Image (tube, rainbow, N blue to C red; front, side, top):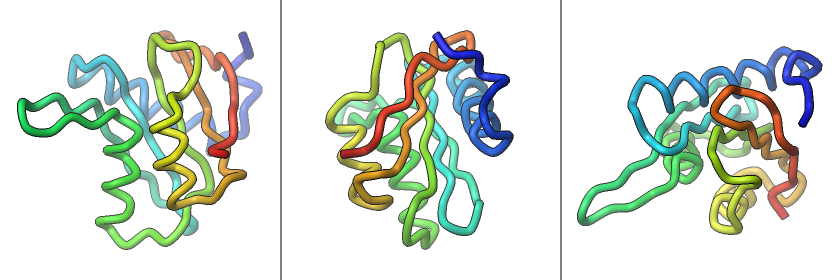
Length: 117
């Protein structure tokens, strides 16, 4: 495990926002992404009968719908040990293969950082 306080303040911010979204909405995952201008987009898991999106996929979709053209970083708060291939693909589609994806546990502790490739 990695001490989240050692993160860059902007990265710590998106982990905190992702954790807040998860807790506030009572969903399995919370996510946040930061676009090329520094704007952040925060989302939780979407689980409707007709639509299922992970929190990170939803956050990326929100960024795209708001006009973002690239991502600087992404964060997901989850019980999983790492970001899924589908989540990394969504981040890669907008941010590129080298975009960092911060993966934190429900307590906000950073577990790992992977790239979107």
